[in-house]
Length: 327
Image (spheres, rainbow, N blue to C red):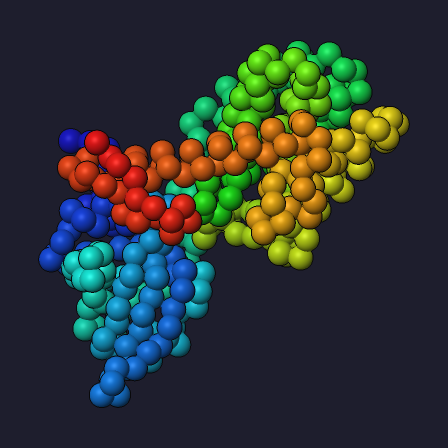
């Protein structure tokens, strides 16, 4: 009898999203350490508080027995094998780590599948072909030339773009996520341009497809999941995206390039959201709202998809500061 891989994994090494099925049971899990803190109770007993994660979410874990030993063993970003009991404490699921010095083991990259930490969009090639078809509808030769320089002529960039996530956790945090997000924004922008013919449709499409190109350099996918690169930490995707456009647009009239740069620079919309400049053209303004809508909707739909169908409300989402109705 061949047991499907996803079913076998659920019961041998359950994902965070499946831990509710194992309440008051012992589990053997594979997780990445997101955070750790060695703490002390009022009576002086030390315990190790961990946040563990995989591609489906995060969970709190507590080690009451070998706290100092395991604090020395694990680091943030370490992938570990954990033995413990799943309990419900303070209105959320928690793993109480077993009273065993070997309850936490560090794993090497060969010991687990990268798919535990990063999922992948199933239709990457189909989406990319749709993106190329959309580029072919851009009538302005200069904007189309820039797009072709990125998405047709630069094979290395294309490979990176097709495999890049759009974020680490908040939205489109999976292989192919950047492509999916950029294509969604461009398709919505195309519809908006039909309603508002005053907008420069070609500029809007070009800006939609290029607004997040810097993320191919901001993030990298490793065996431990999605990580921020050194360049990403020091510069961020907005600065790197503007730099990439500068290199790819030589010979294009300045008045066109500067409008595209402005879309990249302003697409976060507000200073407090990381925009170095506010949107100051109609195309930049509408692209900010479209980009924000797609990223938030991806987040919300992901929350709803992971929740228990028997519940009326989702868990509270810190990023969006609310719960969502499930029925």
